[in-house]
Amino acid sequence: MLSRFVSGSVRNLEREYSCTVRLLDDSEYTCTIQRDAKGQYLFDLICHHLNLLEKDYFGIRYVDPDKQRHWLELTRSIAKQMKSQPPFTMCLRVKFYPPDPAALKEEITRYLVFLQIKRDLYHGRLLCKTSDAALLAAHILQAEIGNYDPGKHPEGYSSKFQFFPKHSEKLERRIADIHKTELIGQTPETSERNFLQKAQMLETYGVDPHPCKDVSGNPAFLAFTPFGFVVLQGNKRVHFLKWNEVTKLKFEGKTFHVYVNHKEETKITLTYFAPTPEACKHLWKCGVENQAFYKLEKSSQVRTVSSSNLFFKGSRFRYSGRVAKEVMEQSAKIKREPPEIHRAGLVPSRSCPSITHGPRLTSVPRTRRRAVHISIMEGLESLRDSAHSTPVRSVSHGEAFIPRSRSQAADAGDRTAVISDEAYSPSDSVLPTPVAEHGAELPASLRQINGAPCSIEEEKESEAGTPTRGDGGDFGQEGATGALGEVEQVNKFVLSVLRLLLVTIGLLFVLLLLLIILTESDLDVAFLRDIRRTPEFEQFHYEYFCPLRRWFACKLRWVGGLLVSK
Image (tube, rainbow, N blue to C red; front, side, top):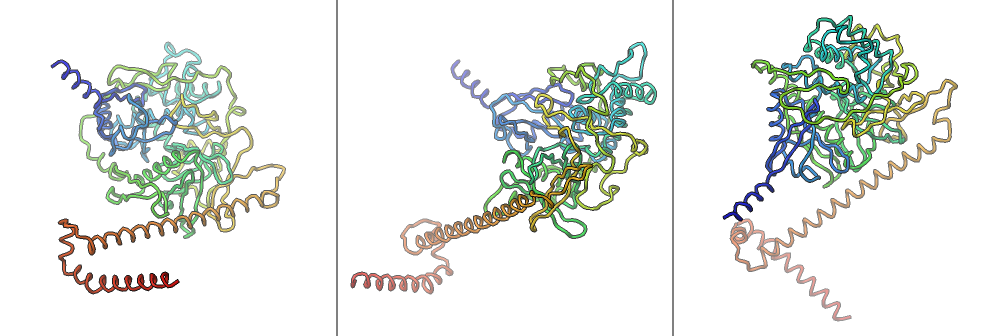
């Protein structure tokens, strides 16, 4: 009896496993779920724990043993998606950034998005001018420590907090000045809303960068935002394509293609190369989901997409959630008492507060603040105000971006700075940070070589007037690259045709075997018997198959006679 109890307990343990999810405030939620549980079950548990109704903007992210990031698919089993052994560790993050985060229905949702954007600022994913950075940091201070109090906040108090990867004493003083003078009396909710409104107007709002290389081998970061597809190079946005201009996304191996249809009815293709095929597939799936979420009007319009145009090759994927318009319509119907939010005060060693729904567990380790202060003019990469990029085509930036506020326009003449120039460290964040190498700014231009698909290439600017590639010896290398690309496309087409031919021959062979079994064998199977008794089959058998069999037999006898006579 005892052995049965023990064996039953062991079987139950084998059917269950532990799962830990790190939340946006760095606390952890641990639960035990069934081995066959799907991602939706775990996601609903977390949303219930947070008392979150506007949950479509969020997702669960995990990293596999090969350090590749993934979003947990809610319609599939958790155990089948994870490549590691339990217990599993994941994290809750904003998956789809709201187009207007300050307009979210519930305060709890705005607070979680606030925490996510604060993480983006700290890890260098949200790039901004120095003046904007000071205002954002001051809003964080006001939301989490309240009004300035000389008795509690001594001189230099803002230097004890880490808002960015690194910053100077001048920036710290500016943060404190804004906090002392401009934000007095604002409640945490008001400061968080103002923070979201300011962050949403930045060009890199909602950017989740994917490291890639362009066809010239230059590093680039691709991202999908609420407004379209973005390419970052050298800490600058070099391309922005609205979602209605992106017609298709596909990948083949490590190659990622973006098909674009402009208003001028010109079609171009942007090509990039991911570090691994797995990273390229993750990039493609993120693009498919973001395009469906922000572009479509209804979730019923979502279709299964294929990663390749080649026959019988490629991955198939379908976005399974609601689209942005449906989410906003559903949010408008929420009629409940706002859930209580327990904000924890900002402590010097952390940049993220806590939602105290339960006891705090562990936290993400933070990088220590650098002892050496780096000046704004020298240590931070400059970000030019002139659209921050060379666009894909001639387009007014008023169409591409959200209009800037008056405060941004007033600061247009100031020197700007990027609040990130450090390399990505996995211990700091699950997302990489776009990094610019110290040196000249690298604008981009769109180029077509021998009619090949367009892609992004960087050209270094020089005040001395460096000749372009078309004038020097590098042109031959570019032509060779274009020729190799055309040869590769031809080879892929030939392989695709051969694959189709082999599959067709295989299908015809299987049909021939089935026909022989139906007509020549004596198998008394119900399935075959029913087919043989149909009038259509009898007509085919006597009018077509029997004469064809006699013809083949005659030809075989004739060939046999020739062989014997020789």
